[in-house]
Length: 128
Image (cartoon, rainbow, N blue to C red):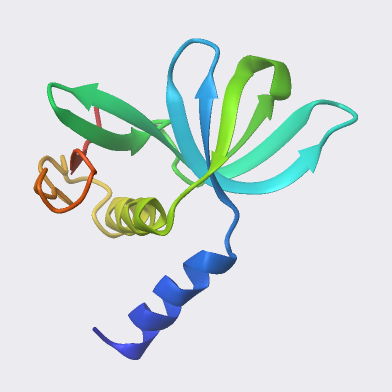
């Protein structure tokens, strides 16, 4: 890996990447950039949605037209919030990088890991 990629991976620790479970049962991950607790609003950037397809978890754009969109969540529409683990941050970063580098590709079976590596399920990146 080159130095720029190492620097980018190190910078992940400083980002406030969070996973939210929404009241409809869906899960999203993104960088939390602002919280207005008085208004009950959370602003996120680079939001991707987890989708379960068989035994695989897929990361796909939450807003299909624009991965770069800021999303504002109402705190009342969320059930849970947690900070993303380093491993999940790395998968998130790889997914965003792939989406920005190859915006027209279907991105099937990218970023897949074996079930035996750690406790993660297999991962796949999807546009659908």
